[in-house]
Length: 510
Ligand code: TNX
Image 1: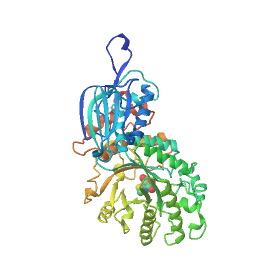
Image 2: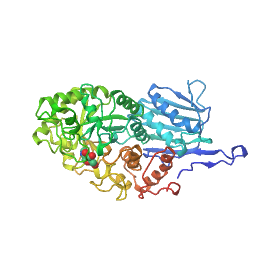
Image 3: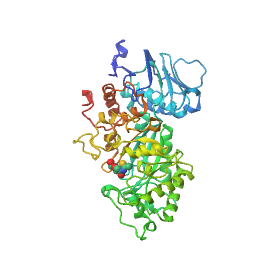
Image 4: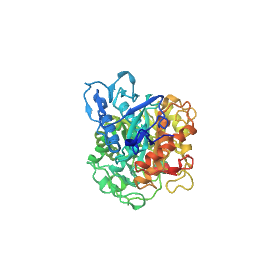
């Protein structure tokens, strides 16, 4: 357990000034290698930052933003001259590899090395977590802020560590999405999949088809107000995420889950008549006309604009639960739309049902339910993102008393969400085919940021650890004690969370 604010005993001047020292013992995700040392590095108004590589610029800005409010220290940027004493230094080390970093905290200096921007971002998140929970405060907390001495050598197990947010069933504005990005980044997750369209709503401005947002943007589950992102808002979200090491993966769900499209554009309907908007929660009843050229011209328009707005390499085409699409036409649609995504320079992704189509090996398949689909996809050379509903779905209730969510894949408490392995989850799936893990939050029952947080916390850090940390030596007992210590952090940061009884919360937050 962290000694978060031990009263100093060194004389009257310091009597009311706590020493605020964190520890390596509560890090999530658990780093690959840690060697704690003696003493620590004291942060003060004389602590300066030396940035020897532009690759660290974004991470250094984050570090200063994270530490400034609670400590009150500016952490000015200085040139290397004048020695290392009292500085936090960022240096490039080419050999280190993707997303990896090394952090050395000594009494006189802190050194951070990485080979690329993401590595520096993750090092900064580690620095933040080895300070006590009060570092999350937006108000000044006087005291002696100390980073514990030690060395961390760290990097991820999987390249894909994601969360999906369904902004179609309920809409969440840019500020809410940015708070979700902050949460992902805090746990070193690097993919935010945005489910931008479904039967109940269309959420992104498409200049060539303004009806999509004029009609489809105005509805949500249960008759809520809906909403959409302008292209500028979407670009800003993508940039905000990128500065924090998070790649946005946009999804336009097709050919099913498209009622909002059909309600917006009469010409895409077989009879030329747009149906009334839909605000219920059923699935599997809508379909684009997969045998009509007008459908493909529309898809090309949308993917062209989406690709131009998206610097990340991926575009998700959905493909799930297309129960209203004839099977042969479905497969042709998937192959053609994957080709459209490629023609705009992006890598196609889809929910596991696309495994029934003729896939090229560049396609990424997202497993959520049926093992056969996952193994078929791997046999066709696709790589897989693992989102098994009974473990990874953030919209499943923790237990019968959870007010939000559903339970079609069972109850998923924090322990169940943590105790599985993405590499061995599906029997017969070769471990090399697994790209990583993603936890989806479907929002039929979720309408506010606080509700998003109640479903994400405390489960999200577990998915982050499954994606990042080495599997050997992983135990629920070790993990849940680290996790319990994070409740104080969420509380100081003003985040909601569920007091799932499978976690031994300290009594102060219970
Ligand atoms: C299934 S998972 C769906 C979604 C629902 C979700 C609710 C998947 C690819 N499709 O349309 O929102 O269940 O848990």
